[in-house]
Length: 325
Image 1 (tube, rainbow, N blue to C red):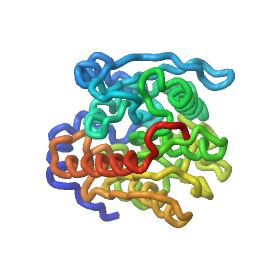
Image 2: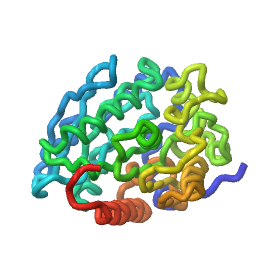
Image 3: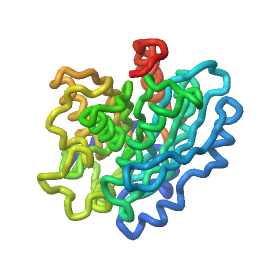
Image 4: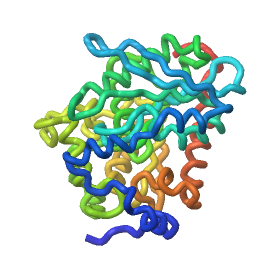
């Protein structure tokens, strides 16, 4: 099957750093992948002095363990500030609350937002719904207790990368159906949404770029076990399964044209529009999975980051000043 070409700058970065790329993850490679998680020291060093970093233990779901979150609040912003509730990538099997935070600081800095990053539990040791329960507990904590840390309860935007993007989408669905707390928006960056793993883009990119359909199958199997691919997978596990996308908050969807998740991300935006919802979609030509984190100096990566800033600024400007949702 023919494949869309990579952007030339991204292709050069991919070739130069090919040893760092996860293409076809297999179950026995999950543990080594976890060893690549970002460290707290690296994040704190990158954040200081513009952000004050603190770590908090928040109540978990009923019957579940407590959840750790990292809060990075801009030091120069007075009063309560909007908040990006960050859910890291890693295929639901790897990563920590420090992952993907350094690239996110630029967005937070340019929009006056704090970042709250969630250390959700990982599969296969903790399959669905553990990660979602942890993310939901963090959202509730930010809304009910965040004001003491200078966070606005009415301006919490769910933000996630890859598996974290899918988790953010699942959390928005669950918040809608459970009556809250309702986020102000959701920013889904190359989101992992569909356990069926049967899209045309997945077939096109098999064995190429980053995070192909083999890696995707490994991750979904770890998260869902024998339920993966079955007709009754709940939308809170795989948001592409949701039949009704009405009532979701304003949504930003961002994906590359040369990656496994292209078609499921595009379809999510299309179906939000079909339900009368608010969505902005960007398909970056020649982008592979996670390209702007991997090659931050490429012009197309700068364009992708700028689009996120513009959307988030518009969203925040539309929110009422202060108050609660």
